[in-house]
Image (cartoon, rainbow, N blue to C red; front, top):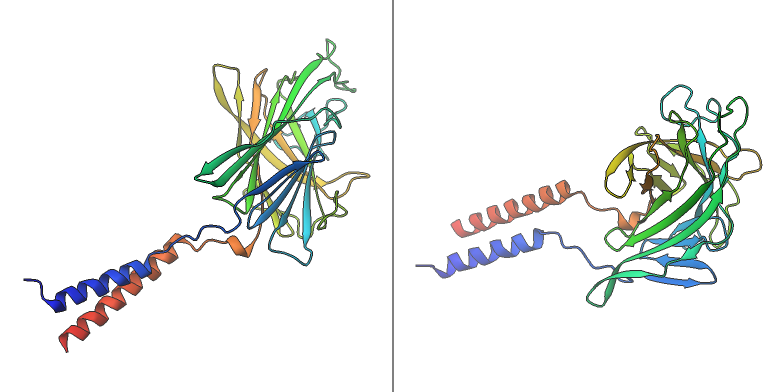
Amino acid sequence: MITTRTKLMFSMVLVALLTSVPFVAAQEGGIQYQHANSVVTVTTDAIGVKVTAFNQVPHFTIWDENDTTPGTDYHVTFINLFEANDTDGDGVYDPEVDHRYGDPFTLPTSDWSFSGFQEEYDGDDVIAVHFNFTNEDTFTPTPTAPYMLADAPSTMDLEIEIRVHINATYIDRMKFDLALDGWEWMYEGSILVFQFAISDSEHGANQGTGAPTDFAEDESGYKFTFGEAWMECANFAYAENGTHQSQVQVKASHGSGGQGSIGNAVYIAFEYFGNNSLDYDPTLGILSEEVLPIPTETLLIVGGAVIVLVVIAIVLKMRK
């Protein structure tokens, strides 16, 4: 027979269990987004994102939504796409050692088309936003001595697509895919390099005005931190030919922006992937204390300790 004392003890243990279980609070503002005057702006409770590509070189700006001082903007601008020799065979582009095969394809300043927004909903709440900028262009590289080819370089019909993803589950970051189709290689032993410029400015500026403070590359060689922001590069890209998908090795490096440029340069080097299309997905984020999660291990230890202490107290109380 269950006594009143037993029922009371069970109820108190249940309350202890419930109060020790971590609950995740829903974000207040959700995802806000708009497209106006050729600029897409997206904000969450932690990060602000501005993407400018239509009629301009592709350019991302991110900032901390919780910094109102007015804070700093971090700018990531797409600069060049070029094939280069890999002198030491390490897969990394080193501008002091490796050399471009001819003039680079400078990402065009016009004809970027905006896809419109694709939203994902949970009830009436938007939990993810996706959009694309796409450009099609024709490019004929001009090889330079001593890298002369037996045949003239092929004219390329290039299609470059920038796919942006913001998810309410990760409100401190944005992911973007770089999709490339139509690249014609000069040499099978070379690497293809995407060059970015990273700079910063006071919040609200349209372009970067200087180099970010504390620019650094971590031990993995795939994550860069600068000021209160970061960029993480995936270890692999994916090559597809319509029927088959394979991994492509990726190596990241950085250096000075070069003469006349502002900020730091990041070079994403891809190994030879033949006539396939390429798909790659880096991530940009801000180091906001507002969104730093409590480690699961800490929650479990603290929760377990609370339960044990409450149960001991109940048992001692019942023995009196």
